Image 1 (cartoon, rainbow over the protein chains, first blue to last red):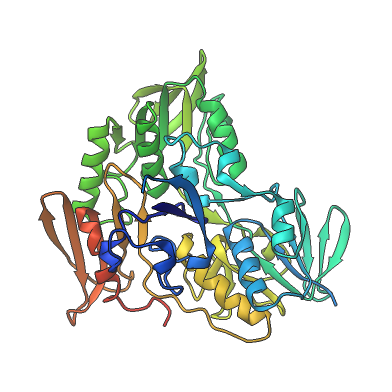
Image 2 (image 1 turned 45 degrees about the horizontal axis):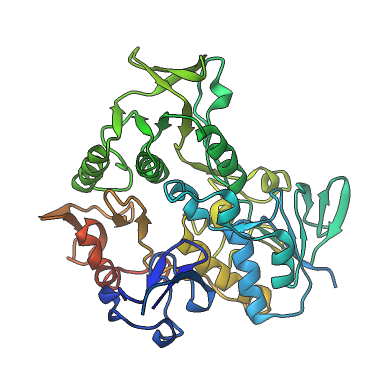
Length: 58
Length: 381
């Protein structure tokens, strides 16, 4: 499980937590999120996110 | 062919360049910036301290890396002194450069309070990465920080610094934090959240004078009171940078005036971001920049495109009391309906026909952001 960070606003997508309020279940891998998904805080497209170097156990 | 030229390397300038390169790989692109041209996360300037981030860590790419990534020529540390819109020319360090199309992504200046005293010039504001460097230097060894202003940036800094172990005192002539953006009940939640963290408030008074006192400063307040602080930070708002455009005869109001195509009153000159006033709206936030950059990138590539603004709620990054707000338009009379929950406040504002016109959410209520945003009308449809 990894964390991904938005290059613009710093928002972090944590695969472990998912984003239940957006219908993304906990444990959803970054690869499985649709390409038209955008950062909930600033609207940056998925392609502009960057991976944060945190690899949790699992 | 003369290049498309962008003045400014903040979020607006670089996002536009990135979006433009998605639709046009080859047209020459020049970016001129008074900064060092590093790309960094602007919103993190006001919440990166507690997590120990240095300016180097916030900077994701150097000017050189950005130039390669964007297939652009970047001129860092250069200030454009004049624009000649009839000749399609800008002046920079006494030299002239021709442009085919010009984009003003100049940003905004922090508003400086009128302060007396021998240390008035020592008051810091943080609006770019270089400011952040100075700010971090000033904080090294400091214990007490005074913040002037309780807007979005003031509250984010208060939260960040108190978490970072500083004693934080906030000065504001109003009665509650973020009162210009939030209904009273949500402002009170913010007050509560930050107070519990240890923030001390001085409402109903302004700072009048700042004088040196030992290693720190004495702050004189409008009610005659005094505060002592090692660092004084001002966060009382932003003023769009309009003087360059104005001197070139381009129409300015609060910001540089543009239409829905982000075109200014001058031929082939566009503006976006914190310096721009788009159809009367000055919105110094991230979301409007993203939307404007996407539309303008298409327009510059030859496909004229109007900017659309959906409802764009603003996230206030105060972990002590997370808040999301989409203020109702100023021309809509509205009464806030407040629901207090166990760990949060939900405030809804409906127009005369019962349609949702705005909302403010704090704490756990912020989970409803997406659902409520989808019910809001577009800002520019």
